[in-house]
Length: 222
Ligand SMILES: Nc1nc2c(ncn2[C@@H]2O[C@H](COP(=O)(O)OP(=O)(O)O)[C@@H](O)[C@H]2O)c(=O)[nH]1
Ligand SMILES: [Mg+2]
Image (cartoon, rainbow, N blue to C red):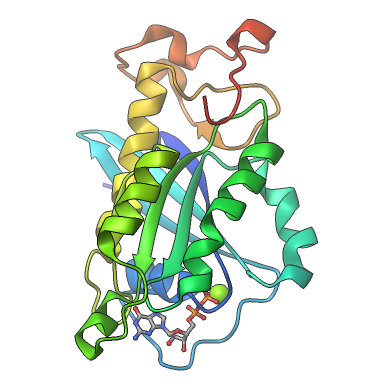
């Protein structure tokens, strides 16, 4: 079986301040590697990974890894619009990176309208808890995630703890969103692509129809 055949492509964006470990987490997931001195992301990098969300349904996850620095925002903003998923990443030892999560969230929601982005909140570098470096409690992070309507996962690119879970949880939620109608395929939007609609056995027949009517367009964040 050709593992690169896919039925859906989801475009997912990495969000969060510089140095929280976005690129490291992606590298751990896609290559099972961790580098102590990883090159700083300049502009936007891009990674691909495949996941079978149910038997016979393979999703190509296309990850856009942004640079968190303010000076790169103008580059990354243009990519928000065509993303269906977002990993909001902070570093559990860096309080400011947690405080900025709401800003990242609000900025994306504002810019993707009328589309909707499905998020997961990730507390990165959880291996450093062992060194008593935690600056954000799990309870606090869970509270913020609940307020923003998303799950919270603690991960470490260094040890690999939950690296797979955060990406796959998000991908499965996007797929469920497609089945339920929360996520819609719209003309001129690249967040989700469907390779062979007629060949799929979907629970929701309308999923394969492209719609541009305003009544079907949802606002971001409910
Ligand atoms: N201890 C620890 N360090 C990490 C982890 N993830 C990334 N780092 C380190 O944090 C620094 C920034 O990582 P990077 O992936 O470039 O962050 P980005 O700017 O968000 O893409 C690098 O020195 C990484 O080696 C982790 O899970 N644990
Ligand atoms: Mg990076």
